[in-house]
Length: 270
Image 1 (cartoon, one colour):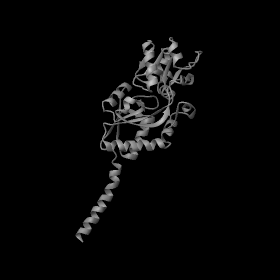
Image 2 (spheres, helix red, strand yellow):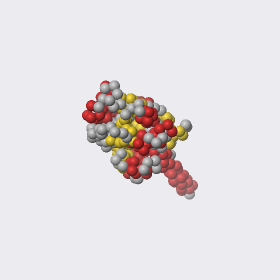
Image 3 (tube, one colour):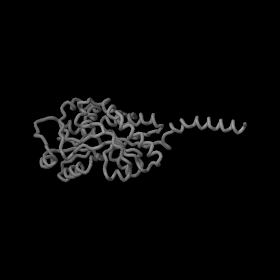
Image 4 (cartoon, one colour):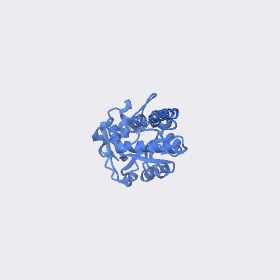
């Protein structure tokens, strides 16, 4: 009888612990350095919000994993990922170098475009035309990487001496507004989000001109899970991000910050 009671008590204890273990999530806090990036990541004093922090906080509620956000410049964020001190790199475009250090989970498709203030400038049809028009000054964000075509174009612009490499999208928006540069290579949602959060450039969003060129095609954008994490934690995060990507959750997060008209032609579901 005593053995039966002990067995029953043990079974009840294990049953009670199972939900706790399921909700325990990750084995440690997940380090997520972030950089201000339009409405993707919004930094207001000590408050961090935006599309991607919102998504991770929702994921935290479902998995039990705790995400610890710290604010750094974009270039520093990429450096932290390289040395294994950023458990998640998000948002991110897939590159061969990053693949060596983590597992990529695509969340949406997007593409960088040529963004400028509307005027009488002749259209730019491709990268060759942009490179040939040496009077046009171009701004980019340090640490952004949209793939090999983007890198080759930016490197050539740098050799021509007309590239401005800035710390974040807000700095780029200020340069455009001041007329210090003629265009930028960014996702339109990034620059629109930066304008929304910067009082000094209000009204500029309505005057933006957006041009697609074939050398900057559609690509997956998503998150990298660092190999520096334990295998179980990597698996937990990968499953949660995949589930998120297969639902409407990511596009719904974008639509909380942008109209469907703005997203059209720039961001679409995976």
